[in-house]
Image (cartoon, rainbow, N blue to C red; front, side):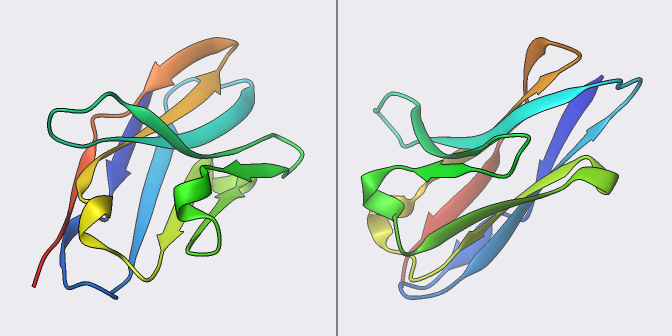
Length: 114
């Protein structure tokens, strides 16, 4: 069982990206899924999280700019990131409760720079 994140890259301020994270392996249950990020020299922080029922919550710093969603059939969680700012630069990690255990993806780097 593993999580594979993708979609990061270099983007100019004001730009957008779509991050994806797919769960694979022998999965019989998926609980909450989410995205965290860790900027250089800072602690990892919650960006957004979505429950199995589709309820989402966001960090105050990203509300109105980021949208989390999930495709249950594909075991995938997405993070649409819009109006990116330099302070959004970080490694973004996906997280999910799979088979009642907590898993982390490998991280995808988002760099916002002109």
